[in-house]
Amino acid sequence: MNLFSLFAFTVYAAGTVISPIPDDIAVAEPAPQKPDISFGQIVAVPTPTPEILGVTTIAPTPTPPVTKKKSYTIAFLGDSMIDTMGPGLPAVGSKLSAAYPATNFTLLNYGAGGTNIDYAIERITHGYTYLGNQIPSLASIRPDIVVVESCAYNPFPDADGGVNRHWLALARAVDTIRANIPGAKIMIAATIAPNANIFGDGVLNWNAEQKAKKVAEINAYLGSTVKFATSQHLPLADAFHASGGSTQYINGSDHIHYSEAGRALFAQKVVTAIQAVL
Image 1 (cartoon, one colour):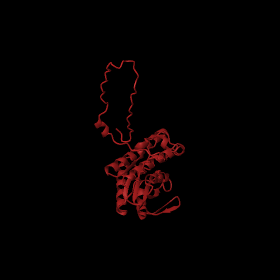
Image 2 (tube, one colour; image 1 turned 135 degrees about the vertical axis):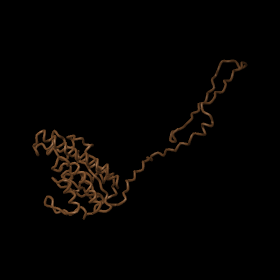
Image 3 (cartoon, rainbow, N blue to C red; image 1 turned 90 degrees about the horizontal axis):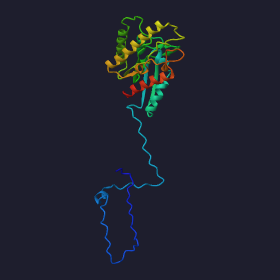
Image 4 (cartoon, helix red, strand yellow; image 1 turned 60 degrees about the vertical axis):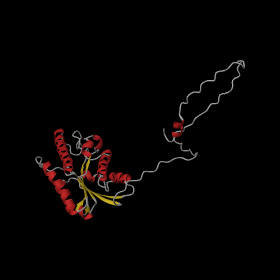
């Protein structure tokens, strides 16, 4: 029985009924009935907690998760799929702040449109100019966490062996970060998948065969990126499989980059991976 259940017994008194039976006739007394509950059961019932009128019980507020440090700097390295997340990656930042309200996060966008993984590696140790802005090397910032996105939308020009070359480049990126930013946590990210039916409409103006070929190539790079992270036991933000090439995650104007839903999906996958290393 629940400790807070109300337990009560009601005793009914039997009244005297006037009967025409003569006084000299004996009236049989009814045999006492066996009680439905024993004394042992009565004393075993816990005493209910008294209810105080006007007082409402409020559940305690959950304590927000605590991180090892009060503040973190997180750098995101990649191509336009990082660049188009915007300065400071607000979609990621808002989710992190909601998850860890007592922790300060500084998010740095090291994305550069139209560049492959080789140039991403160069930006780890060398400053560069992008869209008229001079940006210091990633290593000079000494971030706590580095998120390396695949750069799959800018594959190598050699179709044969390009995926293998990309795998080795990812390994080189990881080694470069470890050598130049000791102690930094490294994560791998695979962005949303393209859709062969709409890829680059209005921007690239490719025919169906060209689209299908390019989309298959990008998917091969993204799939290899996921396998690389798994094989190296690195935290992975996998928006590739989660998106499945659905058009709801793809920008309706250029048919390549993120829609708002795509940006939110990528941000959620990144935050989940970051939580594993905080």
